[in-house]
Length: 296
Image (tube, rainbow, N blue to C red; front, side, top):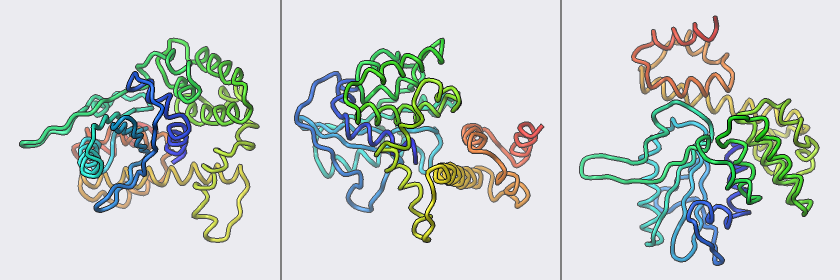
């Protein structure tokens, strides 16, 4: 949820930067479209539609390649609904954020009998960071780009953030940079180069925190910022756990309660890793062997 909201904020606040990067064109007449499509409503994890010059740029950000339903089918579904509703040219781009060896991040089309649908795929960790460093709206993504020296790249991004003149913009971009950098960098390293205070002072961070705490507030619980962060992380872990269990049940059949108990103990990072490899499992024995490996 944190990464989804961060990227949605960047796209909606800096649409020109994304259009320039992805479509190699300048746009002045931009309209942000709603993300809930007609017919039976569907919402993506993170999706923004930018309409300009009778063209829609549909962006889908993914931290993990696994999803239900599968991402290629979702992209076809989005395209059909968009085309039915707006009847214009649609450019679809899936942007994978976190490095993985999964073959799923190389899939760029849906194929079935008599049906084929293609879309663009960008793996951020393979991209040159230079284009991201040139625009405030893309700057946070630079932390995830290709580099032989991750620490130097993070430092370079921090320098670029510090050079933003407008204080509110600098603060928001700093927060977005810290949140996205958390996908690949340890918190201690991020704090060496970027101000942690920006988090507490930033309106975008407060919006993200608010959404993460919504369920707790509905029960009348007032939480402090640090506790809210911890709850947000735990909520993310529980969401990832539910997704992994659903995928395992579809892959292996209903898994036994003992294995489910062991899954409950996994960290968010371990669940994300499991989500990448579980498609290779053929039986519960494979899952058990994987659990024994990480626990040894």
